[in-house]
Image 1 (tube, rainbow, N blue to C red):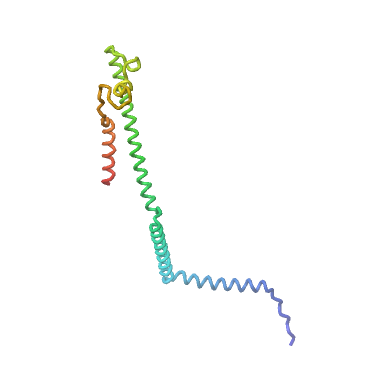
Image 2: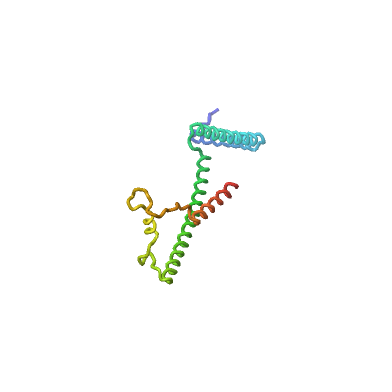
Length: 177
């Protein structure tokens, strides 16, 4: 009996074949595992646990921040909301002030036109304006005694009172929300 020579095998080829066989077996096994109901239940349980852990960590960090008395996320959000409300109120007051200034300018021009029509000099023409009237109520010597005329302290102008009432009404409307 003569022996026939065995073919010389390539070790790299054998390794590739072994890898392909093990890959096929692992693929089939993992497909069976993933398609099972128990895997879906395990995945859902793992996901819910991960979400719960994340929530617990967030609550814990919020409590740590609160204990250190630093501004937390909710505090910053609340402050941002209050800042936006304050900016809106300020913008509204600015609009009211601009409106009142324009009305005051119109009133002054109408007054000056009426004075010119009546033949009285306007402050621009050398008549006594507001600053001259104010100086007339001051003391000439600066000793605190009035110079014959007493000046009644002025309360807030009706325009300012109107602006304050508008802002107060807006505040109460926003607070009631």
